Length: 241
Length: 241
Image 1 (spheres, chains in turn cyan, yellow):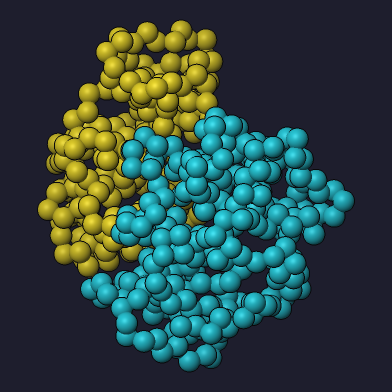
Image 2: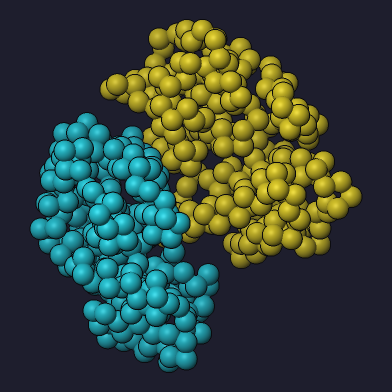
């Protein structure tokens, strides 16, 4: 089990018990890695977590994640102990492999529609980074969010997954947990319009109370502090360790 | 059934028989649309094809593909006659929905590994467009191709799908069918090194003889002529109509 500290350049490769458990290579404040944590927790899959310092990556990372990406999920019980990368692929793998708490619908059409919706979420993730790094405004971001407000209205359910959070909910949540970072960046210019996004407003409140979300949650203050230190060039990875 | 001619601005919306068949909105020379054609043909799914002029899109396209994208697959038998977009999502939907000739492996790990490989294929698709539009060299393109040569070697099979073409094979083939366009663009600078890519060389030759590939094939001359006219600003969509 990792201590929660992020391992960096020069660190010794952690020695994990040979218990066959999955090994997740992660970074505590990475929204993509958070997707993998949420699915592992939602499906109650026992695993080890090893946190990685992404500024100065450990030399041994290449052994478990040849492209040096996180999240990477190593399957130590499989032949050659392969690792999976790409958060959506990891999440779908876990959902297919472990029966507990199915997240994606079984119906091929509904599965496809959820995946198209996640493709469209790229408008949110790219808008998010543009605001933080290129000083773009909020218009594009809110327009991308309209799609999700409309979709919740269309589905007529509290969650994208129905009466409880499903695949789409957990895949998009990490960016909503980080809305404070945009607010920190934009100051008074920031405004989340609850009248424009009534369904999403309620959805955010519900997810904050969800046990799975709570199992891997960081407060706005934590996210803001991480972003502040990252922007200053000395990312405080171990803020929660 | 479409006549094969590409419908553009001002065209009447085609009247298709109410026979419940899938409707594919496509463009004859689009490599992403080709993915959908190959899967439909591999799985012998009867369908109608409507070809779209992408330079001047028909006004009615928004009714079947709200983002005006092709390929779009309309499922007229489903409630509200929804359309699917994104070539990989369409392909996976068809593979899940129709039992004939399964393309993706059933094993969750192998499925995930095939999807990671397709993520990495983005290095080829983006390299391809960079060469054609930004005058970049070939180095990046061949380096991306090394991954696929190595993977075929590692799998030890003639095709990525094993002893016959599978999901990965059909998803990546359209760009190999268009290698001539790079050659046309780069002239003598172009060189496909059969010594560097012996497995891929053999794979290309085998796929050219595959019945599914042949069912939706255009010659190097056709691709070159399409590209030439497209670059000149008067894309000849109906070259094969």
